[in-house]
Length: 171
Image (tube, rainbow, N blue to C red; front, side, top):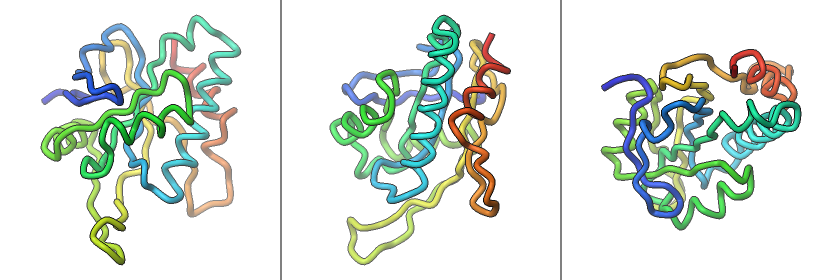
């Protein structure tokens, strides 16, 4: 399996492959829609950063496809992902799949995740790698886009820093 490869289902129920984005940069984040804190904050900052980048250079911004890959296929159905991704950016693609498909996609990105039991069977959390990947137009890893480091008070993942990072890498 090559880095960044996947075959998943989008929020409209369509099959999507990494190869569908040949020629485009991909901004990829793994998380889950039921996340109470980190995922929504990370996505908001990433998508605001992408929007700033698009405002500064619409042509280069259009070359970036934002992608959210769920690590919680049990709850993150296409119907659940549709309103979730719509809150963050009009072009954000929400992807889900079978547990095996999600595991394969996570492995391709070297992302780890696991379920953390909650107070009821459907009230669990998901622990996961907190990274945003920028893939080049050939689907190869290009950069890790800044996200907040919870061990510091610095705002590493601020939208202006995300936009600056995209400006540095997207040609």
